[in-house]
Image 1: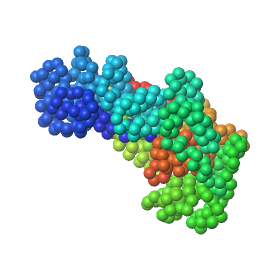
Image 2: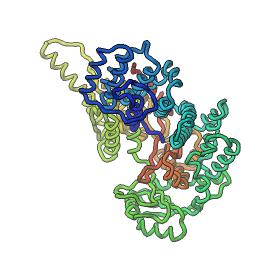
Image 3: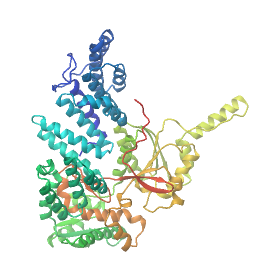
Image 4: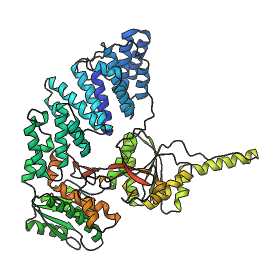
Length: 624
């Protein structure tokens, strides 16, 4: 998987250094040399700047570029930006124009200004000079462009850029590893696109290589819930496209399909607390599992034998050993953290086990244990990353008191600060009575009124006064449930903070549209399950038609559906790091601790209803 922008920043510096790596104190030339750049001290940088003031023409540009490179390498981004601005683009040689543009893009990326970097890298003249650069420089530029496009969720354009990059890598000596990685990244971009978009592109593409890629991706994604059909479609595609790069080397996740189909477990034990406190939650998960089960039956596939076991009041270790003794080849469950903690104490499990929650106190990695749940931490992290991508830098937190609020806030704050963001405050509420007081305090409105009252007392006369909220906030992270959010959002407007963007987790929406109740939440952006918006889900209509459940259990239905489809792919997710399953609970992949991590879809309230929105906001008002 291509890195998100969080991890791009160190790569930005490294790739930018290659352009000037050969210069040191020599003339700047974007050639094939890839020596490690020399780190310069502040004194040495100042010497370069002094020499540049006394120089003219190409010599002046060379010195300024060398100084800007050193500033970028040292993290002096403002200094580097100002230095680059002193270079006149008029009359600049093609080589130097290429280097200036790449460095400007690197500075923008390192500053978190992705849209500015995009403007530089797709500048009209830069496009013209790019193809005339040495091979390594072209590879560096196209790699940077492809990574940026992926980070901006412009997946169609990623495909074109990486096809061009593949042709360049084909010409480079000893570049097969890089070429394989590029094709894997191309495949990852394809799989991010919705199925209907892949199918449309497969029909419309005139470029044979691109058409082949889109066709393979559409076939693969259309059959991801049925590995047998997916394997058949991939094999048929390979027969029709024998000379295509993907036919010569299938994407890594597809290479395992034949083995996964052959080894798919056929006897599965499902361990859930079917009685007691969590019986209703377990019933919802079971309904999701069975919806996926009957969906597979409708396709004429061989069905696994599902056996359900009640964990309530049972010793989980004894029950686990019992189901394995009775021939279970796979275990789905348990659900409670305590039971998962017990299994996690074992060094290994005899059969693959997909727990439906996350261990609370796991110390090491238990071989065979995989964990899949609806962790709030995944959502809080995703909100921080999305808000950062949208250009926000100063966040205010509004959240409930207690453990649930703490888990959201702790993850958001850690991710936000790691990205480079600033926390303007963390305010908590317990009841509805706290909302107005909390928000007035958070927005500094109370102090603003006090200052006005004080001034009136000094002057002895009335003044026209309108309270103004603080100016150091450009984002509000709201942790709330629907009933709370419906009152907090208008309270923000009452306290003059109605125009500050609000981001929230999925808990703000239960999947039921109520235009009257939710009209006050207009504008709130939130991360949520594709289950609520993806019309391609085969199981949701079954659940809606046959399960008379509460909206509160919608997430658990989706969890059950995805658990059924993910269990035969655990080996694929474990062995192929860039492999994902695009499910009802989000885009799923496996981390190093064998925990399934979810990347959800995005939505926004408009006219009192929730609508799915693009992954990245293009409300970019920054200028060059």
